[in-house]
Image (tube, rainbow over all chains, first blue to last red; front, side, top):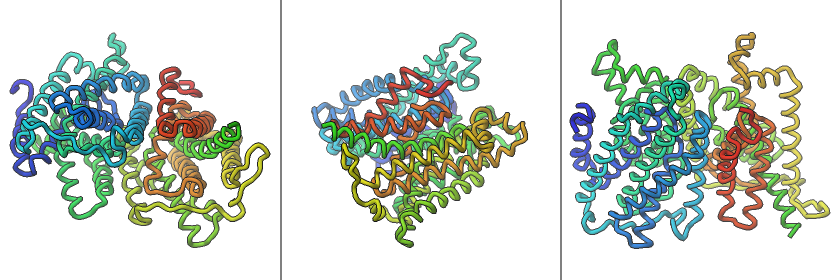
Length: 317
Length: 286
């Protein structure tokens, strides 16, 4: 693992993984880790392939509903419901991806966004399965992981596993091709790579892990609220990825932690949280486009000697 | 049965024409500025809320119809000149995220100013009744709405196809660099295009109030629909956006007659079908 992750990444994983449940209640810490998985997965598209998906909530929500429905309606244990939900989400991501990757750029963004709304309406209308507007309550954790701490450890293991697999994926030859597509799609195509196919692979990988995050999330508060599948939550996931730093592997996890912290703090004083989110996002976009990870890199390495990461981020702007 | 179908088609045409106005506005901004305007939906909502307040203050629906869209244009001018213009050199993802942030802020502003509970608006007295069309008896306001929106789209079409300014706008949507090179102040064109887009969204919002009512999330509900319109129509096609708006309105209205639960889902399925069969959109060339 030391070879897979560089030292700062490893430090962030260890610090968050061990520190979080002592700062927050363990279930909230588990929620942060699920959001972290979703953000890192989304970054496979945004940071590594250069595709901005505004529909990640459809996979998060779909994974959550699949796991939740299996657990509540069919009495399936979390240990079987989560893998089943991941598989179902991967199939959904493949179907949606087959349509979405046919268009790139602005169209890709708009299509993912529109399909997100379709899935939202599906959850909204199919009340017998999903509970509609009220959400799906009563998603009980199995006895083995019923208490907060054991559930946190369960989540942390899946979190670590996901990060390892995603990191191996982006470092693999296929992952390198994704980065080539991001930097120059025409050139990637000219060197003989099937750009559409690789984009689809990236889309499915991102969807699959976002679905896993959602499936775990269903058991965090033992409820699937409908807002987890609304496109506003897609915006939240993009926000986490971006504010953490889309140019770094671990940045999105920091973003997920920051997002949760900000939301908890603000909600304490003011119930108009989306307003604050909007203002922070606008400020990030106008002034801090490299995100937290980018800022840390810039500060530690000195303003003159910009690192490769910071340069890469600048090239995107 | 045929009466039911006829009135549902007319209903679909009424909402479809609203969709068309919003969709054309989005198409203009998308074609010219190269960004999907995530704040477009909330501008539509502001058109409705401004209209609601003007009716409350002055008692005139017609004044609201005139003034509310113009107030939205002012908002559009501020957003373009103070926000988007600062981000022209940035990657378009960032412009889009800025507009998304703005949509959140503005939607929350609606809740802070007008409250979280929705309103309903009555049509003006003259249009409150029904009209006998021979084959169906139909609400007068919806009929007037169809007529007004058709007039607006025809006026817009004449403006874009017959005037010099319209030619510049069309040229800008084809190739904005070329327009700038030929000596047109492209920033002014951007500003006015964004203003025109905002006007159409605001007008649709104001017109929609008597039939759809007002809720703080009405903008967020309209946004995905307007995206679907643009995707179905194809890049930069004004006529296509109008046709797609009507198509979606009627499809939605007919589905809601026979299978109400699916009416919201049908339009996205339609979009998926169009992308698979004709990725460039029904009216797009690229």
